[in-house]
Image (cartoon, rainbow, N blue to C red; front, side):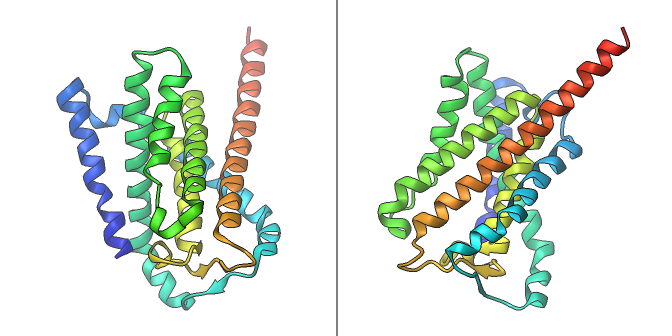
Length: 238
């Protein structure tokens, strides 16, 4: 069922592309940015998440050892199908929220409160899941909104969606395919998070947002160092 859910994001991607074409006369590729998809920026976003996840793995064990859900062979056989579908899901969401909505609002309003905050709040609201999360549903919304703001910042800094898609993809691979939460969204995880009375869902939600925001910070650090290096090179060529 989770694979079908991820595949359903093809409809979101198609709807966003049609809206851009019919309402604004724009091709879907323009939503990515002026230079289209940038594999290097995408890979850098994925690498930032992977680096933070590895560095924080020891601290994460303080919440309890993950519970193995499936065999390595069965899990690896699913990856050729699961990875492209997670990429579809994350790319569709970024194209809508940090592509279509952010760009449309930025064309009308100069304030980041409009073009960054509004899509982030909408992104957060879509993560409301009261039946599954109970009292912690608000935290999932706040976490998604904060992550949406980080992705908006990356998009604004790079002028392209590729890095934000990479960060989002890396985060969702970790959360859906490696250490997943118990329940319907954890069906593809190699491990399941040991959610119990001693280590409630709230702790894992906070750990997830901390990891993602740390990856955003790492990406910004790498980007700033690259910009300083390019600036120094340009000054040296004068």
